[in-house]
Image (cartoon, rainbow over all chains, first blue to last red; front, side):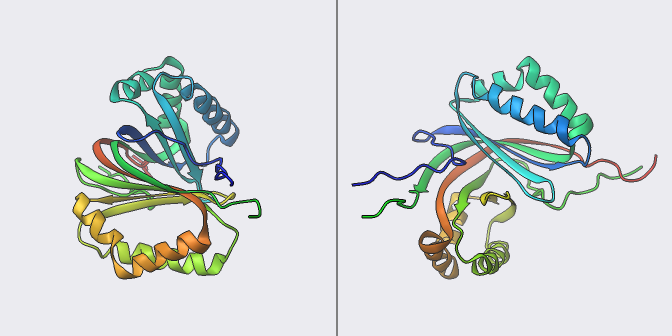
Length: 122
Length: 122
């Protein structure tokens, strides 16, 4: 018997329903170091908020990125949006880091996953 | 007067509500050429399905990718899932192309966007 290996970039969310914030953004060319530091700080901070269930994030070589964060409720999302350090990050995002973005709040209704491949012999 | 410049990677979706399929996947190392050809074919085919509203996709250098496709209704999503060529792509994905994935179906309830930067002088 083996158990599936977990894949680091995939969020292990509970059974639906829960909420997703889908944030798709095009980075500007400005301030790569400042952006990277803030992105790391926001990921850490988000994970400490009430109702945080996980997040998944990918950015391609052209600077197009998608971050999906998962939350227990819309109230938890509203509280995170209004968090003081996060407000400052949002301001800098508008002003400096993004050429454009779309943000969508959605209620996850169903989910399924493919287990990771078995990495041990059977 | 200027109009906002559209950003190629961002889907221009209508006012909510509509549906999102959030597909987060870790690529295996197998068959890069076969995967790339199929991914392109599936993007073209999805865009021809009834109820398709757009899609956004990013994959990072470690092979972690997020594709979000947007649909008018859950029935449109079910029809796309059952499309014959897509079924074959799903089979190959399970068998060959993915080390793991999470797929979530969600109802988009609110959305907002940051317009693209003005690219002309004012």
